[in-house]
Amino acid sequence: MLLFPNAPISPELWHRRFGHLGHEASKNVINGSYATGVIKPPTPYPLTSRCIPCLIGKSPQTPYQNNAKRASKTGDLVHIDTCGPFPTLTPKKEAYFTIFLDDASNFGVTTLLSNKNGAFQAWKKVEASWELISGNHIKAV
Image (cartoon, rainbow, N blue to C red; front, side, top):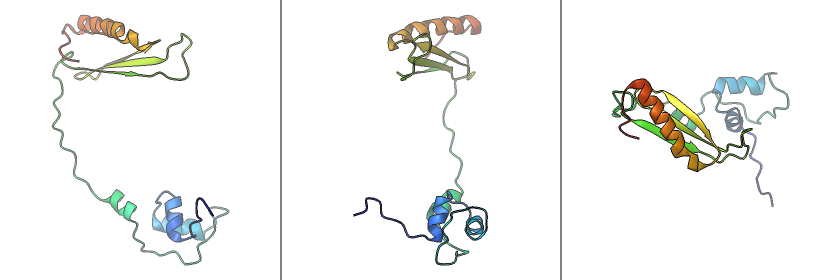
């Protein structure tokens, strides 16, 4: 009993294997000498085949409504994310990093951490630096 049954060679199979390449291009690859080892399907390649994933991918979509409110001044809103641990350590044995991003200016700082406990100390340094440079107090994190 086969765990993965063999799919019958068909134009649709080659269309999917080519990453939903256009039908005309798929037909040219199968029938031309562009590739070696291509097993040609027993039936001729249809010119007007309907592929549901292609139809969905090519259908127009209305733009997203941007209802989000951006911060108006530096320090009004700061986003923070800590990531890790990573299997490969830095030369200084750091396995984590923390990212700080200001919403108004889109300015960001990344700090490396040896453990998660250092995230608060890293935030205090970034907060002091940003408040000194911008002259604004951090209002929300």
